[in-house]
Length: 270
Image: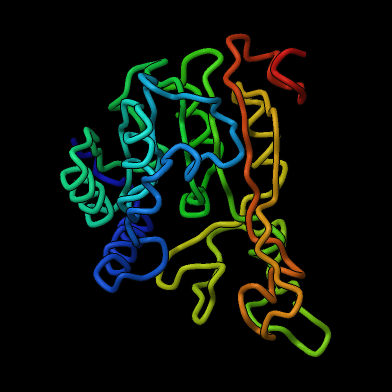
């Protein structure tokens, strides 16, 4: 089932990810045999989803590539994966067929989930991807609509400070070269591991990433900054840059039935 992207920027990003699959670049490498030894631990090492997801309706959002969807399916969930790239979704279908797993693929943009019913999913998993759409709020609004009350939303995003920072270090370290309150997409980049070449990306502020999530009906239960820094990393490498600019933020949130109550951050029992 397909939903055509409404803007030229989406077409650019679709082509870019299709090209990355053809060249086996970046996050286009499918899950390996080792990943399937304990698939739930592989994708949920923090234990945010609990001891079992068997039978849960789970949406992998903007998560094609033959990894996320098939591992959640191997853990027992009923999985749908959405991605804008048909080449990424082809990887999911290929791995699912190889592993005899039932995974449904849908080509659509992460901010347009009209093909799904309200409250259809128990769990929504979104790896780093919100940077490819102009409005993260529209993404949150769509996720809130398709997630059942008390459902879990786990998402990872590029930190705004990392997107502001220079790709390579200067004698004084990494400098902020992009304004925080910017309008429109970031300039395209070359030679970066914290961004993807040929893609159009947007910087989303903390107010949008966190406050926007709360205002759209979610309660934030936990937040982590995945650690990628190495103390003795080679100058100019991804791990070296991560010593100064953490690249990602990982958020666990829960859908609230009372939207006004979602403005508070705390535990699910508060």
